[in-house]
Image 1 (cartoon, rainbow, N blue to C red):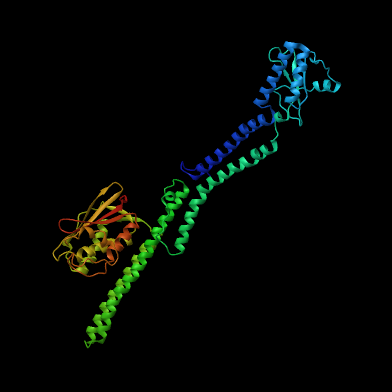
Image 2: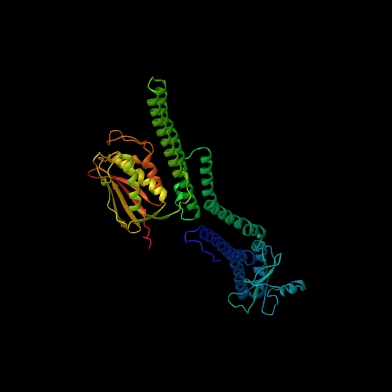
Length: 452
């Protein structure tokens, strides 16, 4: 099984870069800061080196000027300046003053340290500083003053280096991970809580939906789901309101008819007509609700539009009394589309009935179109006079009937809504436009190769 690499904008790369940067930063900190602290804790500072080198230069000058007496005088002055043992020795490790070295001092001379040596031992080591002018002539030997001993705050700096600073950088890493992961998840949780509180109009912030990683995709999916849920709930509520309103009118007429003194045959005819209308209204409403909420994939097949049109016009001519010559088809047998036969037939039938209903008695309804790439762009044009430009989208809303805008009446304003939902479910589009003589319904349907 092949493992697919994450995309260029995947959250994986953001997390990887963040963690790699953190690891490299910690390695750099461990190396550079550790080296700096090693210099601070194991080697003499520049100030200490400068002071001890100056003392050696003074001792050399005292030796050159007055030999032993000069060294004795300088050592006496040093007792006032430093509370440490100070001596001046020659190249043979003998004292250059008039006071010879004791056995203990001679023993200490074997453990002298240079200025550039690391100082690991506790306590105050003895340092040897050669004369700056002539190192072979002699050296200054001094017990390192307390103020120059490195590593006095070693424990404190270890806590800072190994505890505080890594902790701060880890805190920064946690803040980065929180902003990268937890903040958008909190936004998603807030939107889910808003849905639970029936606040379906709440949307995620632009910063969340504009992300190019998986969380951005999830945010856009949440917003799309929220819009879809809001639209579905609003449609259902609207359908219930409109359905209740549409049912009250025939029920009221039935009550009036039942209380009137008209004959039994007329009453039966009136009741049958009203019941048929209510049944058609309920069926159309349920069909529209099903098309809007059902998301299962429809079985697709090859459909020849010309054959479908002939079947639909035969029924339409029987119902409307129009002659077949008034329902023309300008599409040849090469027009094959890919879709679901039942839903496409219902959509085209609703559009055809709407065109016949709003066309004059001697009008003509024409089905035409042409192929453009992977789609057949079909159109059905009537001679009903068209609608206002502002109403070209409103006519697809449920229970919309434009009173007085087009001749003719009848229907409940559900046919075009059902037709658009049915075509959308098949991957197509349906829209309206005015022409010189009437209204044109444009359909874009997927092409299917002609069989055989």
